[in-house]
Amino acid sequence: MRDGINLALLGIPAVALITEEFWPQGDFVAQSLGMPDIPRVQLPHPVAGTGEARMGEIAEQVVDAIIKQFMPVKAS
Amino acid sequence: MSALLESVDEAQALEQLHALGCTDGLPVVIPTVARVTRMVLASGLDADLLLGEMGPMMGSATVQKVAVAAVMAGALPDYMPVIIAAVKAVIAPQFDLTEMQATTHCTAPLIIVNGPARFDCGPVASGFGALGPGHRANASIGRALRLAMMNIGGARPGSSDMALLGHPGKFTYCLAEDEEHSPFPPMHVGLGYASSDSVVTVIGAEAPHSVLFSCDADDPQEAENFLAQLAVGIANMATNNAILTGGAAVVVLNPEHAEVFARAGLTREAVRQRLWTLTHLPIAQLRQYGGAFADRFAGREGDYRAFNQPEDILILVAGGSGLYSMVMPSWCAGAHHNSAVSMAIDNNQFCEIPSVSVSEQ
Image 1 (cartoon, each protein chain N blue to C red):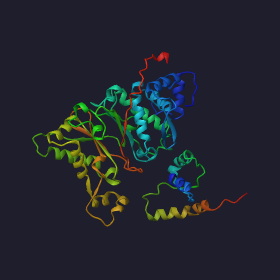
Image 2: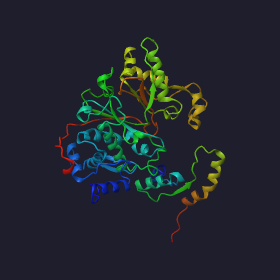
Image 3: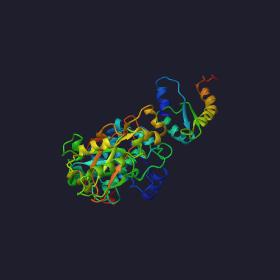
């Protein structure tokens, strides 16, 4: 989350990837750093150490959600 | 200015503080206006003086807010100069407090006190059981820093402090060096301070690990054997020091163990240098145990260094004399790789406050 915010502060579009175990911490950090609405996508936990096949599965699950976060918001 | 809470009595106030998540789980002294004011007065500093920001919440650590933590921890006003110095040390950028508070690793700030403040602002225990219960200054100075880290820095288990298990030193973790029973000059002198200075050194550290060594003055290999034992303690393959590398570690020698080095003619610097050499470890071993952390040595053989430099191994003397010394490996991460930070204790500002009975508070 902090990395995502730091990138956003540099003007680089960023989406934070946060596992479900760390989702509340992500909210806390986003609030603390004054960017509560930073785009984020939830991943299952754990990701690290689960092997390439499982990471591929997770990537398949979330890739659309990540791309969607980068798309412009339509004016209502 | 700190927010004020209202309650009908101290019992209700305590429950309120527990419910708000402002305690460490144990009862606290209720930080009434009178108690906090007295604690601020003892510091000799302005209540609104900003010491810095504490992450991850980036709360403003004013003298008054630190005084609130000190009161809650049960500290005496005499301890305030040490508490203020400890807070300033963890706020220093090189301490990486925000990252340390948020890590999944079990790390807590170990506070080491050197110099006259050990007596003037305590006594801060350095002998038998210095890291255990029964020493008011040790218990409440470390606890005050923890409560400041929780209530000013916003560290809460499972939502902002992500330590998977933590360790008991997260309640309090403070001791003094036993300079009087050390064969070496005081630790802070080696860090560039005068022996008459009072200094806190704070380092994010794991819980203490015992190192058993049976002295044998007839064995010409005694010191070398002990060094090998300590090296295993600070950088065995289960530690971040061996896997992540580049961090710091603490060695607490009991006076009897320190004498092993003295009779071998080894200075603190020589001990540190040898420990640094003995913690050069085989890359093949890291490959076996370190998983992807070994990738940075891809295509290389030979040894790697657990510590970048000998100075990253802090050595002090404390505890009762006997078979056991202590080592504390560290987290080794953050932008500054979990470095130790020393801060002079300014007790020239300290004001002696006449004691007042609890009923008058």
